[in-house]
Image: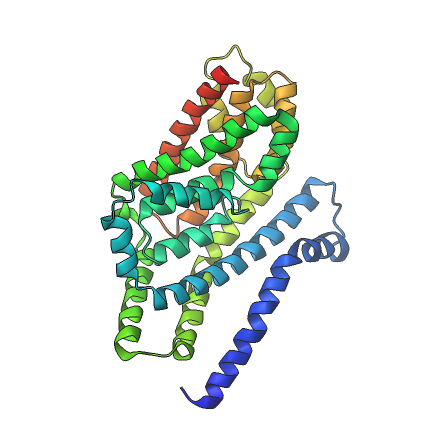
Amino acid sequence: MEKKKRIRLIAAVALVLPVLIILYYFLPQIVDVFTYGLLGLNADSHLGASVNFFFYDTVKILILLFLISSLMGVVNAYFPIDRLRNYLTSKKLYGLQYFFASFFGAITPFCSCSSIPLFIGFVKGGIPLGVTFAFLITSPLVNEVAVAMFLGIFGLKATLIYSVSGILLGTVGGYILGKFKLERYLSDWVKQIQAQSEMETEQWEGEKTPFIDRLPSIIKDGWDIVRKVLVYVLIGIAIGAAMHGYVPENFFAQYLSADRWYAVPLAVILAVPMYANAAGIVPVIQVFVAKGVPLGTAIAFMMAVVGLSLPEATLLKKVMTWKLIGIFFGTISLFIILLGYLFNIVL
């Protein structure tokens, strides 16, 4: 690469990356000013909350998608995909890889849709699908904000049971889904970017290409991923925004009472069309419990809301076939239902 082009590229990256990071950090305030200031919408109205949610989550996910895709491109450039894949599939790790992926999901503050960029990055990087699923399952379920709120509202015992079960759900769910050998149900687009990433890495290793010459392809690949999933992001977040803030508490309290044997599976089914992060749904769970809904049933509802949603399914459609989405949602729904019954026994 010519010296002038290298300098321009370094300057562009040095400018764009800090801008994106700063934008991500101040995004809530920027979106609030845009929604409630420039557009003049009422923050207490359903429309205002939905529009604010749409702009915030759309920009947030696109920034995450670009940054994580580019970061995984750098990782792939220096840690060949085949070596990483062979290590995770051939070494006897005794299932710890699923636990570590699940634990990593628990300490990342992402909702179900925000977890998708990391999921795509992991798949692109050659991480086995079961390990990737372990992260995707736990990431929206458990985070430090939700745990702190849960502790303050429901106490230490319920918080420990919820947190540990969320991590175990990711670990066991990822392990089981990994045993199904579901890679064939990934979308053609994902298979294409995996093959392209492997080919680029092999070429760079063979030619000993310096990092600065690899950077244009890495940035271009990151942008291509953003561009090709943009429609899915917009549709998914639009669905979530339309549902945001709409939780008919009295309806749920009526049909999820303790004397109904079907309350737990019904809670999971009713939760899937909803969309919220864990911190946003905890106060709603408090209302449910105050109105007589058993805590285990309420937790099952919460897990389904944050871990399974229509917006998430829409985003995943770019990555998976509908059959794989159905297997993923069905497996996790079954586990959540079983946990709901278990919680009602022990809590």
